[in-house]
Image 1 (spheres, rainbow, N blue to C red):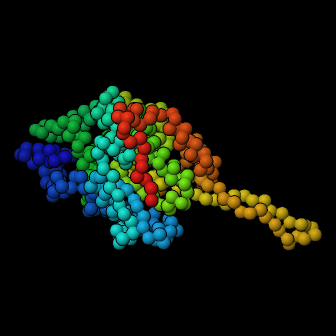
Image 2: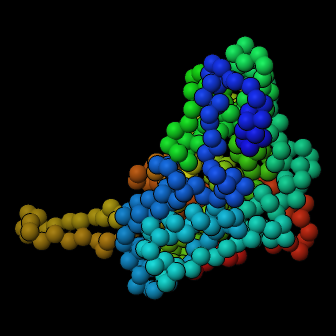
Image 3: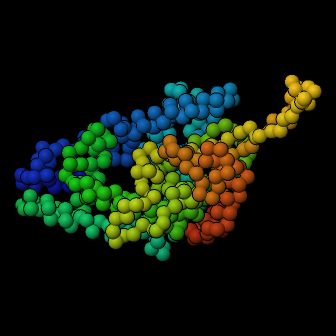
Length: 393
């Protein structure tokens, strides 16, 4: 982004047409080197505001569970070791636990280092074969697939803008940067003139390119994805199986690229057919804006619901004497993705698109048996950690 801005400033050329605004455009942050890796703190869509608001929203929804935390006097929650992830966790904590968060909730920072093995919140960074693209199907696979889509629609934009500005043609890479600036500036300032440079069809192509990179980099289109996501899923399933004795609440904060493998492990948002790279598939399930928007989250709920019970009376002799079996409760698991309930494709036997806990645990273990074991697929040493061990109160 900075390179494009500097090139326009130093070109000593007056831009025309769709890019005329760029003659006077100023970069949306005065300290980009410092702010690029930080949580956005300005504008109506600021990340700080979103995180705090999410905390308040969940505080309202789970006030009963929060009361249990307040009664206990302490709770742990976790974040991967990235500045913006940590800040997200802290702003969320202020909204959920209150402004004196540090007195109640302890934030544990989990390193994003390669030596963590499976005991991590960021498995894409500890999985050697994935990180280093050992078989060309690792982290960079998504970029190669996205490049195929970009090569379909960007040349026409290059040509269109070149007709308006013959003295300063732009490259395909710069076109993609312009589209990217639209989103970042909108978050920081509320709007961006770069958004008006492109047509709706061109935006549809950009959206699809972003969907493709997430799908093939960390989503269902990547052979490593389910193995990466199963680590946190399995650790969470164990907590759900323990029930209330494990603690009322668990919060973990990670990058969007760490949420996507978890959704793959759960087999949510199944995409059939696989996203093509020869054309835009308009009728698709996998959309980044639905799956991992800015501030995206997955909430897994453990529900205890009253089971039907048999009641009877001694009518007609004693019709007012009604007797009932003792009340029992059934336990279910429900998934809430970005404030929408999403049913597990293989299990919807409970109320409100939930799944019975027993069936959910069976599905998690079945999924684990179907995918490659983390250490094996990642090419890790035998002594590397094989599971998450920090997720406990």
